[in-house]
Every structure is written in structure tokens, then in C-alpha cells.
Length: 280
Image (tube, rainbow, N blue to C red; front, top):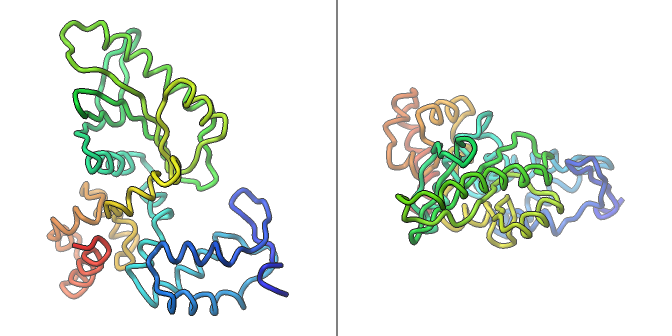
């Protein structure tokens, strides 16, 4: 059977034909070399079977890539790494705040703001050119989760309540410009349509096209700790508990590795991975 004739099960349980070029493209985006990609493809093709899940294909590709190039494997694991930031949404909020800062915003996390009717906790407040943006982060720990239209409906109603109070405050000299809704998965088509209609800005893994979360993380090398292949899951959790979310933060405070009991030899390997991953 040809590889293109094999049916692959997506996270939605739908079946589709195996797309070799799609796999190659994802490996290229991790900056794996052509030689490395060819080796991985040659390893994976004989292991394919009808009904194999995209998750299993990812695991096989990641395992092969990790043996060849740990830094590319870190990039390749980015989507899963963001899911691994859970179970709470706070590390994700920190990541989004960092992305905003690299786009010229000043940010505050977890700000309580009084609306016209009730007070609201805003995940991230972003400031730029005397304008304020209220950013709500919807973190999902399950890949197949979708933010449907109910989510922007709710977020926009909160924004309206805050904006009515803000605009009638004589002591406020800034403008509450826009509400944002951010998720690590994706939005339904109705959610996108509604948000465009009311002026709510959406940001997801790959939306807007060529300017989503993945694009910006790669652009600014703002990789979360959970991408690192040289750390165990337990070590990643300990580092996050010490309020270090990004690999660049770890590079700036490597003494945290001593605190959690990492040996000098492994510490050197971990910092080296961060250095090459982030081009430091």
C-alpha cells in the first residue's frame, strides 16, 4: 500500500489520507535539515497503518528528530509544549504577556477592573500609545477543544461593561481601545464571524494567518520551558512553580537549576539547548 493510500485519524476522529508533504513541512518549520527529514521519513513510512492517529505519527517523528537534532525537536514540540504549561492558565497568560511585550506593549497580569455593573479580573492588560487593550486568555489542556461563539459573546459583554465605566471616569485619560480573546487551540467559524462583527481581536495557534501564536513565538524565540528536551517533566513543573515560564528566563537565571537539584553536567547541556534554541 502506498503511503498516500493510508487513512490517518485526526484529533477530531475524522479520517483523512496521509499527507507526506504536510509532515515534511512541519519538520522544515522546526528547522530540521533535508538530510534529517529524509531519515525521519524513511523511519516512519514503514510504521504507518490504516487508522494510525496523527498523535502517534507526531510521537514517532518527534522521537526520531530528538535523536538527530534536539533543538529542532524542541521547536517541533511547541504545540504540545503549550498544552503542557497547564493545568492552570496562568503560565499561558505569562506567555501571552511576553508576546505582547515583544510587540511594543506594556502589560499587567490579573488586574481587577471595576465595570459599570460588576468588577472583572482581566487576564492581561496591555498598554500602547495611550491605548489600553483588555486581553482574555482561554487556555485548553485538550487539543480537540474549540472556543465556540459563546466564548467571544461572554468576553465581549465583559468588555462592554468595563468600557462603559472607563469612558465615564473623569480621572481616566487613557482610552480602553479594544478587547482581545486568545486561545491555544482554535475558534469556531461562528466565533470568528461574531468577533469580526463586534471588533473583538482574536489570537489563536494559527490565527490570524501568519500572525498567530506559533508565528510570534518563533519570531521572537519566546519558547516555553516545556519545549526543552533536556529537562524531565518533573523538572519542568518545578521550574514553572518557581515562576519561570520561558526558556529565555531560565537562561537569565540558571541558578534555578541548582535549586531543583540538576547536576553541573546536565545544567551545561540544558543551557546549551536554550542558547541554540533562542539564538542567544
